Image (cartoon, rainbow, N blue to C red):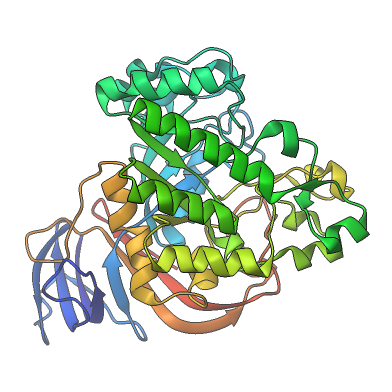
Length: 418
């Protein structure tokens, strides 16, 4: 793969070329030169795109693809193509499968299945056997097989002692334990945020308290045990405050927020459209503002799509019966671009997640591996069904005005362009 990216504005705070418009020459997957008006070598492909910006390849740390078990929703091969065309060169795959990812063979299957893709797949393995919250899974074996963290997707850990033991045990191999932020005793029967509006609509709620009680408990356990804790997809004002205070104490905790939680509010629920049924639920405008502030002040470490394909049979039903989840790979950048500065977004998609999950951090400089995302941060459009790349069509962003167009990626000696 030999290519010349012409007149690309480089967004990489660790590079001496940061915020400069340069030509980037790539030979056999390695950046061979960066400069102004580089000559086009023979047999090189030239790429020149409107308002081209280039950053290090994006990393989405919360993606579900279905396979194994739910291939009708999405499979690994096609899902990684969707990720590539959405700007991601790396994804962390949730154990949202059947069978679950609770043993080393399951982890190795995912890595082998994705080995030929330009997108690197990093499995998140289950923390407990069968995601039942009763017995710890084979954490050490799964870590050695390639799992980068351990958590039961969208399931709270009711057993505080088991989480305590997991945090203690995982310290032996620098493992990251994940805990979904929901107290099941309070939130397990709800569908939406608790508010005057949702009460009027007659829908069972998942109050902010459910999230905040769980996070408070988990942080207390972390303070007691030490170790590394990651809290995925937080959604409330107090959650941000609790994590901010924990970081000030020196606790080794990180967290993420889903793009739909900083773009949409619980007002969308009035339509009874199950595409807005997500977990945690869409929250209030006050919560959205707190989440955005949490990104800006560094409390929130990463932005994720929380991409969760659901087949139409489980979405085109009454709201109470619809499955939780929205697809989000295609819309992550275009939605958050309206809420955040470009460098804030790129930092939460590159440097911070790679540092947290101990992955090599590339820099856009000569002699570095070409692991790049190509995009136009200013292109505006309405997201329509035709824009959906995924096999499942359950998007909460249909009909929304987005800003920011992804051109593609350069990764693993391949170029994928839309």
